[in-house]
Length: 201
Ligand SMILES: [Zn+2]
Ligand SMILES: [Zn+2]
Image (cartoon, rainbow, N blue to C red; front, side):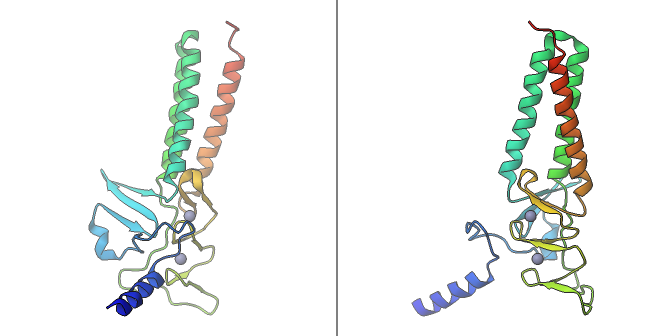
């Protein structure tokens, strides 16, 4: 019946997680642990992939991460092609900073930011008087935990949502994030100094 259909649609719409882009009409909701055996599943809008003993977390802004990846590779390739004639040492230096930037970037972009999940038995820590509960994930938030409306998950030690990393920066990838920033800016500095030191052709 049309009335029932309408009621069902409204109920489904209420259950559907909030999306700032209004595009997630068929978005999977917070996973349950029965799904965790599979090679891939969703935590909010974060895709979790099990690949060769590695667990990769791909955030909703994965396309910004691809742009970033192309930028790192583009700068590295341009620099290496410029210094290729200057000797093996210059070329090795260019390759080293490019690969190091790439590695530290992927290490942060594919890491778990610290997603808070419900315990398998549903026995989350008992809420204390001051504890907050996330109204969307229905989970007790420890201190420093915040719900990200882009990723649709609660993240422990939430710092910010970084589109270039594709997802949030939190307790578990904050160190990797600062490592990448340090390596990336040092690499850019090296490339600039190295380019300036090149004799004019
Ligand atoms: Zn939440
Ligand atoms: Zn986020």
